[in-house]
Image 1 (cartoon, helix red, strand yellow):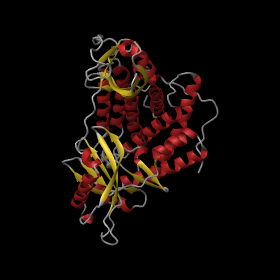
Image 2 (spheres, rainbow, N blue to C red):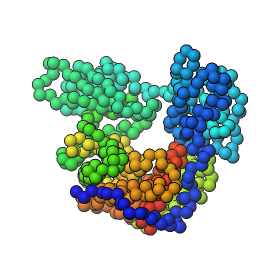
Image 3 (cartoon, rainbow, N blue to C red):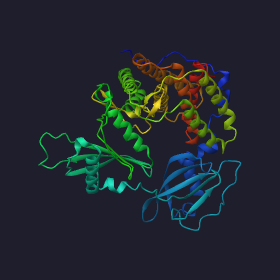
Image 4 (cartoon, helix red, strand yellow):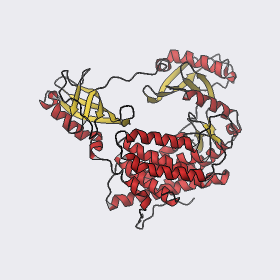
Length: 494
């Protein structure tokens, strides 16, 4: 297989007039970037918190995560974990920050009457326009205690699998070992269970040695279970092209989905990040090979004949993009002037370009949803399963692959000097070639409109641009704008 090598000659990327409006929203302003810089927060806290200013306590570090624009209040918020050291102990203080953007009012700057980090503590840092207050623990999903307790989980899994899967109506689980695979407090948890069966279990039984349980804060689990059941009963199950998990049960009252395993050594996203970072010819060849297997797996999914799933159209995706824009316009009214013309051009072109017939679509097809095990691939996470034109899944895959790959290649390099621009473009060209090979492999197996892929991908990348503002990602803003500019230019959409 031909290796995808980075070009070594100088690259000149001509900026076209159509991108001028979008370039008005880069770079991120310093007043926004500053709240994501630990050293700035430490400096300000050390100045304004009496216990720190007097030396009674020492602020050792500050970790910042989950920076994002809260659409409900029209301000950026974030979680700040401060490690402090005192005469007797070292401990962590959990804080929530709220940014007051320039031009708006500022909170009262009077110091809090309670101790730093105690319930009810607050402090306003005027140089950052950042209000910090003690953060309360997030509530857990109601089902989590059941799923993490081995005895309760054993009974719950046995009962649900018996009721949900006729093939396992006689299953008897002696014990289970819970292992938290993924956790997002109050939103979703994924647990793996190693199951043990009694010594007198029927000889030759096919009870699963491992199951996975997912708990949700919404009804997405119901959609995932119904779609997995439909796919399990379709030709996709025995296609040999891709592995899917066996759906075992869904408990609507607890919003818990139980499924069989899909074996995994790594995800395609893991392979993508490793190959792009290393820039190794052998690693890039292997990545291209598995991306083509993913394309074949996606084509098999699209041709499975499954009729389940609500319809989802390009106009639905456009509405989502406009909703994301509306969230930014509240604190930044000028944002609409930069982004709305691009949305209008895309909408006009979409009206002139007929979509392909709808197929059973994954709905959130990314490299992270492709598992690799001993040369085989499997697909997971069918929460967003729907009926849509094939371009939706292909465009989502390509846009997110470019995003993940460039983050792996560039890290936090957000400069605009010639050397950084050259590196940014060179690595994007490399990943574009991989995505082009992915699309070509799919196209060899199933029909798809290239024009529609471009329209869907443009919306996806534009949403990534807006997300860079919402999540305060200056490096990501630079390269997603470049991604969008190149896509619009090469498809006559600028």
